[in-house]
Length: 266
Image (cartoon, rainbow, N blue to C red):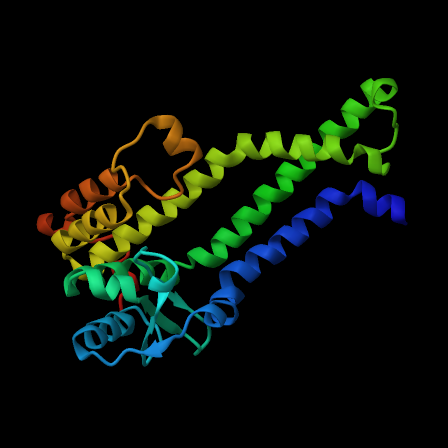
């Protein structure tokens, strides 16, 4: 039994990976983050009213907006929509509230609500879990082939031998590097569609573009980078590309429907 478990390490590894992904995406924002930060109800009606109006238009059952003091750890501006089945919570960090204009805050929240409405968190978990499973299984098959061919040099002949662990780790590392562009590309696609969703529901292209300019200035990031960086490091579209999209995406000007208009609640 122990030998069978060891030889199916790739399956157990994928299950453990999926558990960690679920914890990080669903549980940690609700359970772990409040341990280090203090969420408080946001009372400013200038922010609360338009944000809750957006939430209603997206069918998000949140009745309050929360602020979190992320400035204790970072200067990064962010927001999120978390929770399911009546436990939805909208949270903005204090950096966003202090440094962005009201239209920019609305644009950022429209983007985050797009992630929620389009089910990106759940889809990301299953996509990443599938990618982990394929990567670990490929490493397992390569490991078995290499052991068969080079057993004398390696000094072990079984996958279940603990001495084969360094070989498995090496193969997983190499294959992870190979599939990184796939994972990053999927993430960039989701972010791009959330940008589209936000633009369609607010139709405030200028505010969305200036929000990204503010983000670039605060993070001191480079708006346009080379292809290799984009493929292996960028899990979001490059800021320059996002700004260009915000300035150019206006199907309503031509009387055309948006891709996600049917999802908006009247």
